[in-house]
Amino acid sequence: SAASDQNAATVPAAKATDPTATPMIEIANVSKSFGQTQVLRNVSLTVNRSEVVCLIGPSGSGKSTLLRCINFLETYDAGEIRIEGRLVGYTEETPRRRVPNRQLRELRRNVGMVFQHFNLWPHMTALENVAEALVQVRGLPAAEAKSRAEAVLTRVGLAERMHAYPNRLSGGQQQRVAIARVVAMEPHVILFDEPTSALDPELVGEVLQVMRDLAADGMTMVVVTHEMGFAAHVADRVAFLDGGRIVEYGTPTHVFHESAEPRVRQFLQTYH
Ligand code: ADP
Ligand code: MG
View 1 (cartoon, rainbow, N blue to C red):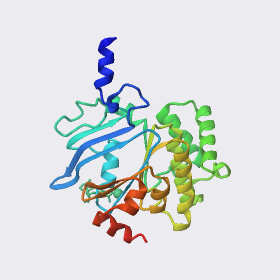
View 2: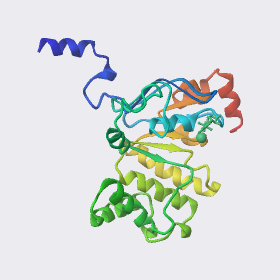
View 3: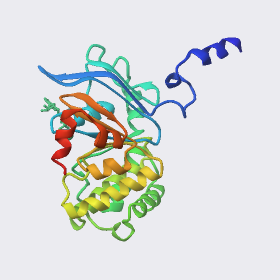
View 4: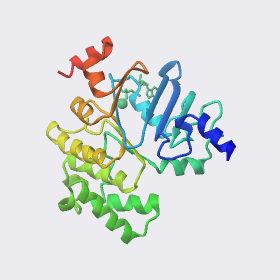
């Protein structure tokens, strides 16, 4: 109709109803304080489908808080966060009114999160860890959960170790189980908060390889990391946070090689 034609011409791309055109995550002017401490200052960031965005920056710059706001583990004070076009955050002024709990649960199912500490259930095998999550969270029948868990554990290179308990697995293997547990849920985006920071150096590579494979398969990922090689080679975009602000943003080449921002240059020097 004429009305919808006119609509199509005036609605910006990000607000289009075509789901492939809607960004996976849109963060607009988000601010947050803990008491007197402002931790996020007017942060804006867009993550498109199948993009890998790495968040880097010094300790205390707000990286974890930003991830936690995206995953609704934290409230924020101002601004908006949208996942697949739907407003999923809520502010202190309008607590939860914007997002009924039921809807929050549903939206959270599409956003996976991998932490520095793997938090596997110690009394369950790798296979049971992944399968149990599918039964509990997704409500899959046990047999279906088991076969899906086997497939995902094979994908992360753990076909031979499925029946091991966490304390018989290396840190790298445990983190791969944790990633498999998230991937098995078929999230639309996965947030990683320093997934290799707790690992012995020789175990970091196997976890980064799993993440590289996920990226190559088209998974949308937001990755807080100190692995500059990973950010340089896998990220589509890199955001550098300092003092709760994104002070540099762009392609890895731009951020790592072309930035004139002193804080970025100084930070990167400590990694060379
Ligand atoms: P990063 O992940 O970049 O190291 P964080 O997001 O963890 O940074 O922390 C940013 C700032 O917010 C830090 O100054 C930290 O001390 C503070 N902070 C984080 N979580 C809380 C909290 N729950 N209560 C009070 N302050 C917090
Ligand atoms: Mg952190």
